[in-house]
Image (cartoon, rainbow, N blue to C red):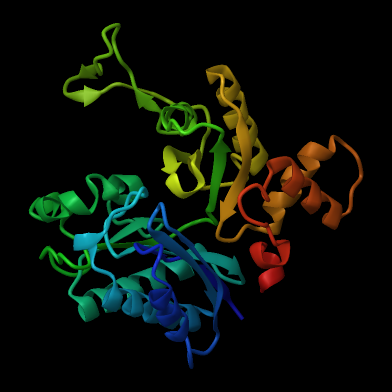
Length: 338
């Protein structure tokens, strides 16, 4: 059987009743299982991880999306995380006996169906993107929900599915197919988010704007001149977690074979030290492939011959994955869940 992961992100991080409805929406759907549901109140966002067959994952993604659409209203939404709509992003990921092409086809079917059911604009990104300007999620999200109504008036931003009619309650959806993404956050021991923001800018692949001596952004022919960041396949930003009285460098590792967990962690630690602040462990949001933790365990093992369990435990210890919440490897490592 093909195994495909879907990781929908919804713009609600606090309402348990809505989470329960999402879970119950999967009742009766064959070959689809919810592996995790991880809300965050500061981000006001919940990350759901589903796994199933090609047909099962499509029906599961639609069911949870419809449950969310019934209960989330973007007109009242506030949160730290960038978002374009109530059903913000719905990526499909090949896990076993499945190809990226399989996931592209599923994302297109999902987009066509959900746009018709909810009368909502849908954009395709990553491997499913039909325009180069829509490959990157952050480019589609630019301006976020608040700028969406005007954005839809621009012919360049005609959605891939649905019409360009603004849906004030739900906003828009981004869906597509991609490699396994690790949502990875490193905690900074400071209430001032400026350190996390600067570190994120220094490390993320897209980098940061170049400025002159007076601090003014330098532009050439109307385009901002950017200094590339150090880490390939990394998106990063600084966020404040008010409930924990701390800040984070919030990252998406879009290819952990290019920038592994330990590289991201050590680079954040290095930049934090340069700025005179300390780090306090890290966290993985959603699930993580076993291979990614084995890579990190081997890095910290320094040539010693450890078995799988010891390498995973070493990775958890060195990355400080228990610093905020307990990292239950039997529930966080996707290989152990399926």
